[in-house]
Length: 166
Image (cartoon, rainbow, N blue to C red; front, top):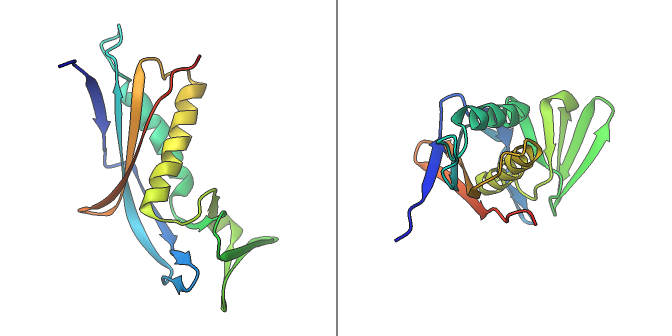
């Protein structure tokens, strides 16, 4: 059996509070919020530094990502049932007969279809991957996994293998 290494980071400060609602044709949840907790697992080779990847780098990058989500209402830009319009200092969101008018500074528009924990995990994965790629920090990394918990005992996970650059 081959050996492998991984690191796992799930610190108290890798969290964000946000409002959201799930909507799809024929159904809409009430607007509500969660205190989300994010965890990161990185699988890879043990580098000459003795690390798979520096814990400090992961914590700094994930704090940056969740900081952009914290204390905002998450609006899924790619929704198949919401109409989203910018109205100056406000964002208007329409679902069937329901209208929301939210201050733009209190919203974060994300390139997702639903504001589910699953899609938030995939979104955070993409942001983290792009930042690690930008920082040339993917050497030896074979997979990254992101978990997003809406509360204790209730989390979604997104994992994707890393394809080495050619």
